[in-house]
Each structure stands twice: as C-alpha cells, then as structure tokens.
Image (cartoon, rainbow, N blue to C red):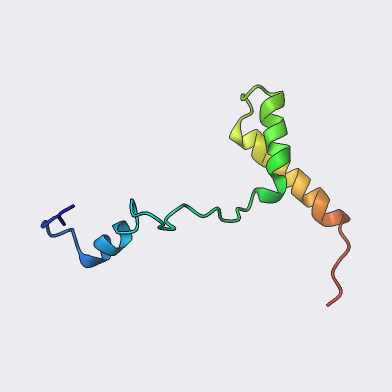
Length: 79
C-alpha cells in the first residue's frame, strides 16, 4: 500500500498504522482497568432489573452509597 503524501501523513502516523493488517502483529486492543470494575456486576444487575431504563444520575447515587458503605465497613489498613 503506498504511503499518502498529504502533510498530515507523518512518519509517526505511519508507525501507528503499520502494525495493523500485518500477520502476527500484536495490535489487538488491550483491556485496561476501569474505576467501575469493582462495581460492574452490581451496575449490570441494576440495568437488567430496570430493563435498561435506569438513569445515569440514579446509578451514580446508588454507586456513591454502595461505595461509602463498602469503605466504611472495611477495616483500616495498618501500615
């Protein structure tokens, strides 16, 4: 595939795009940890119970309550 000649096509862009489509390349997306991960199952349950109709502000309020309960019941670390 010929490289484009427009000004935006810099060598950095070529490096970013080069692994794609090459056999054996490891350009697959990597799953990163997210803030919601510890609460993901609970949020999915709320979505299922509400048939997808739970509002974001309601879920946020529930998460804040859940988080405050979890942190207040956990023993403090002794470092």
